[in-house]
Length: 555
Image 1 (cartoon, rainbow, N blue to C red):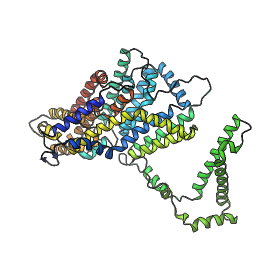
Image 2: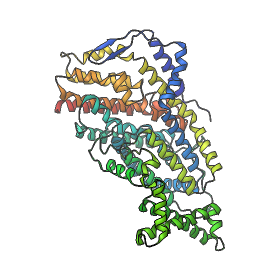
Image 3: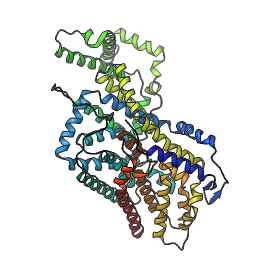
Image 4: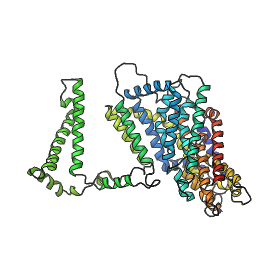
């Protein structure tokens, strides 16, 4: 597949341009006032060392995106998945408008609550597959995932990674301007839905010319395939990931999951309940597998069904389950249970807890990139085991998927290289200082100050792909805090404008991770993307400005 979408070339030019600017503009930081810290020119050696720093600091993004490729490399070769996407695509064809509306609304709300940006890319190939199988073009396929990320970021409400940045940086509350955020979220979704529908109306149905790695082959045989187990597996994993990403305690003050985590960690590992559940489930799963295989082949034996090792595990599980059951119901009526108890007490196992086995757990609501990576890896293992994919085949399929997204992943990492450059050499404040100073002038009308803040944030966002790095580094939020020290009611409006502008930049900024991954995975030209989305960008920018001005007039 030829890759000529222009994103890598654009990033290289940006990287060299910013490096060149360090030769003309000094480093400027802001705490209580602007401080010129002199020149910090980027040399030739640093042009090569910054990518190394990038991998050191953002290796989690690299691993996560590679695992996304690995996931679809495995899914593509699971027959149930091929049948599932075909069924969904066929049903969507009849109710496409309804599907587009529901998908955009649901995904946008998810982003609004969780702050997912690159994390939502885990479902991008699935969403794109549905669109492409219905003969929609690649722009629609990309918009159906990148668009909701943009809308959810613009109208972000309760997410810690986005709204939380401004809550902490501006010392405001999540509930400040909540109605305005919800309205902005809904309006952004409506504009996005209209844009997708109009684009589909203007473009003819197109046959897929490129061989995209995540598009599964069409199922030709008529054998009945059960897809509900796959739906249950994917649904459960998606639900747990969603629950893990909402700030239950941080945002809503709910401590249920935190308390539950503490109780689970402190629970004795070799307690009767844990032993009963673990070995009971082992026996049940093996019996179910044997019964299912017995229906297919009446002559099959337990050994052939679960293997020699499986039979050994089955017998051990039966023995331990029996001992635990006797211990539970008959206490010390049998001497063997007393010996069993004394044995593990003597070894000190009576003090072993679940935390000792699994280590420090992370409560639902406090998940970060580490948990997302582990969860994605566990999902791939479950699919491999559940659908009897041989280890060598699973490694080969996952490896093929990873190879297909490697280029897209490396392009995304180069976008982070620009972030590293602008963070280590903060020259943006030197360039934008004259404009920023206008927002501190009492002679400038508040409406004009909103326009200036929006413009400055938007420009800064094009050089940066991370909300927290931008807000605390490139364009420090402490300036807004000091600038409006005498009028703190302006701070929530500044936060609304900030997240709106930064979310909007995710649509077309060369450093936008969702856009870069989508375009490079779909092999879609950056020039074509800009041509199709510039009007959407303008309309959403207008919405952000109007929302900020209306909030200013009302509050």
